[in-house]
Image (cartoon, rainbow, N blue to C red; front, side):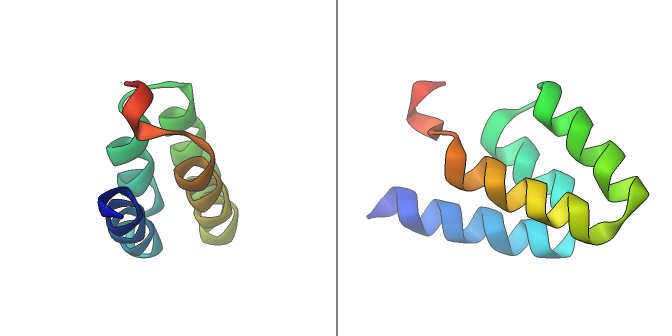
Amino acid sequence: MGEKINDTLRIIASVIIPPVGVFFQVGFSFHFWLNILLTILGYIPGLIHAVWVILRFDNSKK
């Protein structure tokens, strides 16, 4: 249950600034830099990618 709360907080952070939620999920990886590029190109693509990364990647594997 704690992981779901953390995911919810990451998604809220992503709504405000999409790369922040991605950073909290995967750190300085390829997806973080891709999300910055997508956010520069448009807020909505960055937001969609951020939510996808948060829901797709398991944080316990780090």
